[in-house]
Length: 178
Image (cartoon, rainbow, N blue to C red):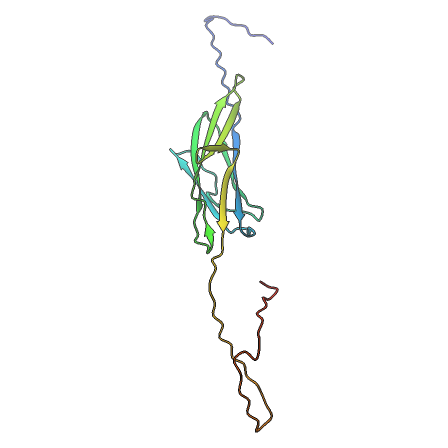
């Protein structure tokens, strides 16, 4: 292959390279102490700071193992992108919600070959981690119950029976369902 140039010999070749976009999957973990975690029980939202791109779904629920997954965001350009992940307080009785938001920073840069790479950092209450982490606590509150119990003694017709104060004793046994 060769080129024959006649006339103007000022030839300019301009090459452009567009790197393949990269994907980031935003993930997290929900833990609950005090009782078993239920699939879909807790809700989370991701918000962009300064118009960073968002995943298609911005509000998600935990799965039965506590995993939180917002889906994929595609980045085609270098830059620093920031997000906030929050747990929504749905007012479930006995739950003390984690009120600390998770700040996510995605830094997209090109290496020497022009290929995009990423660094994702999750920060919560000054601590960094590899994913968003939320921990709630479930506690029950004790309550006092007064049981009003009446004892009836059936006798043969015509025989009258009067109960004495401590003549019978009663035992309260919890059911196996509790």
